[in-house]
Length: 235
Image 1 (tube, helix red, strand yellow):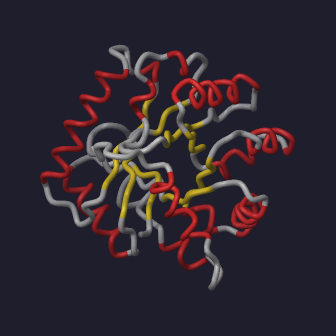
Image 2 (cartoon, one colour; image 1 turned 90 degrees about the horizontal axis):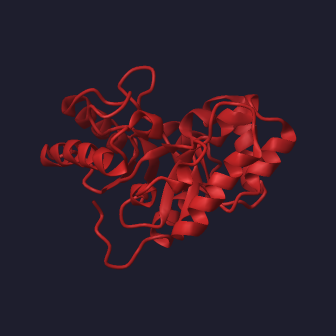
C-alpha cells in the first residue's frame, strides 16, 4: 500500500490546501500517481498557537472531518501534524497527542538554522517521554544548512528519516537519499504537497527514479503498520 507520509491536504489550516475543493483535487492527483494511503500533517508551530495543543487539535479535526465528509478519492487518510522543533517543545502540554493517528509515529521538523545540540535533545525527549518514534521531515533540505558532521549527528537520532519526492528530481539530492538509505537507517517517503501548482503532489517522481527491483518503497510503506497501535482510532 503506497503511503505518503507527509502532506498538507487538510484545508484552511496552514499554508497548504486553501479549500475542500483543492484538497479533493490534490487527493485525486495522489490516487492517480498510485498513492493508496495518506498521512495529513498540517504545520504546528507552538509560538503561533497561544491556546495550546488542544485548541489546535480541535481546529485541525473540524477541517479534517469536513474533508472526509466530502468523500475524497483516497479513504485511508491518517491525521497527524508537522511539528516545528522549538526549545521546550517536548515540555508542551499535550504534544504527544499530535502523533499520527493510530500509531506511535510523530513527524518533527528541525529548524532551518545552524545545527545545535538542543535540537537533538528535544527530539530525544519527545521520543523517551511519550514512547514515540520520531520521523524527521525532509532531511535532504538540511544539507545546505548543516555541516557534514552535523548531518552525521542528525542521522544518529533514534528516528525515521523522511524524504520528499522532490529529492528524487535532482542528481545531488538523489545521491544524498541513496547514501542515507545505504547507511541502513529507517526512512520513509512523502510529497509534502501543499497545493496544485508549485508544490503539487508528485509521488510519481519517487516511483520513476527508484531502481527496478529495489524495495525502497515497500520498506517505506511498511513503517506505518510496524508502529501501529492495537485497537487505536485512525482519526
